[in-house]
Image (tube, rainbow, N blue to C red; front, side):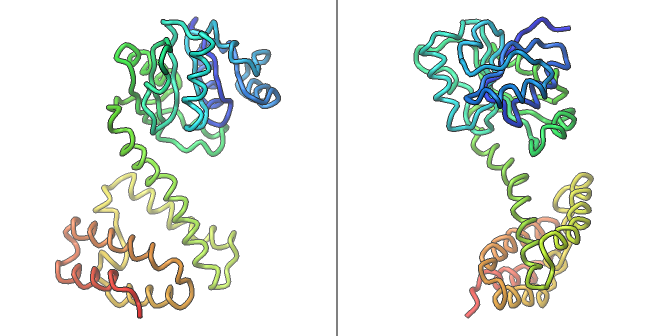
Length: 293
């Protein structure tokens, strides 16, 4: 069992999920800090470490590891306050969970401590699900060379799979994560809403679309995108794409622009797959690039 102590600043979905797994692995939770004491107490109960809730940043003073699970735009502010109060020791490990910001944001001018960032390729919609899903989840880590090995140990403690990422690549990495996760949800909502004019309410539409969404995810789990792609574009069904554009123009014109952009990207993918002939690709690309009169 580890004798390492850690403190958590920000007991939201990410913070409490990770804290739960670390406590289960034997790490000692010394403090959960939030601007709301009731929220900190709620998180402490979830984690199974009651009596450590606080609204005072100085509660992290004796922790070996300080985890900042706060919003991206709050990381620098909290780090600056920790530095101003001289709470952090040279040997303290500070970790944030932003997929975008580099770890060095945790060490403002005059700040101490070793710094690292850890980002999970996982959606934390519900902590109860996340504490299970953390097992096997890829986690990008970057930061001080002296902190990376300990960051990897942390990730493995909650069952994750760490991989190292250069700081200068975090922006592109995070964009990829958002496309894979957030935009998938946006597209699911768009597909649901396109069925409203067909007489289906939101819940019925969501239920009807779920099997094809699940089948597509299952295909992507086994195949590269080039092989998993199905549908009219990869088949070169020009008339079907024309019919889609006509229906959108008549009924949901606000969705046309996104359909066209996604269609063009799908044409490129279909060409790369080797299943869409060049002449069919040119014809589809022209149709998708031409605004309706």
